[in-house]
Image 1 (cartoon, one colour):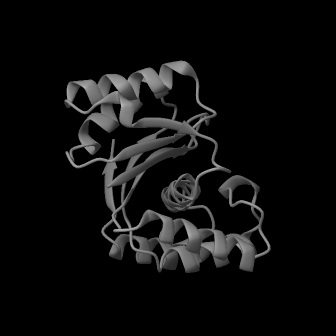
Image 2 (cartoon, one colour; image 1 turned 90 degrees about the vertical axis):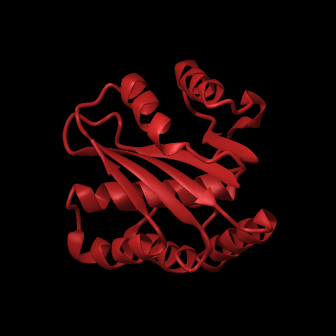
Image 3 (cartoon, helix red, strand yellow; image 1 turned 120 degrees about the horizontal axis):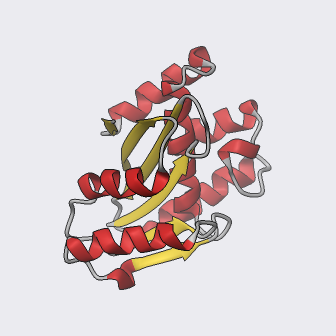
Length: 181
């Protein structure tokens, strides 16, 4: 099992934040990665990023990635939030599996972020060597986590709900687990 961590909206003063842990449960992650890269290529998209992608392309990416085999756990936190406290609180309840191969986090995070995750892993007797900071451009799984985080936050913020609802409903059918605090 591979875990990809991304969050959305933790810097905001209002609305919701999400910490999304996307658990990719496939026999061959390389195939999933290849499919995400193909989706991006078909959409003429260099690399997907929720914040920087126009809706029409975002919608195409969502449609296609929701066909992939993954499940997701998402913590939704009402803003304003202290990310240091909430990250630890949420991840403590979300990382419960023992057969974790690797955990990937977006590399643009401050040092405290990685330290909090390592602390949680040690408390759960999971080696911190499994944690890797990566650039979202390097890792398709992190881009998938970014999509899940952005879609979930948009749903809970009720932003463009007419557009978002049908995709969020499909995400829920994939086994989405939402923890709302």
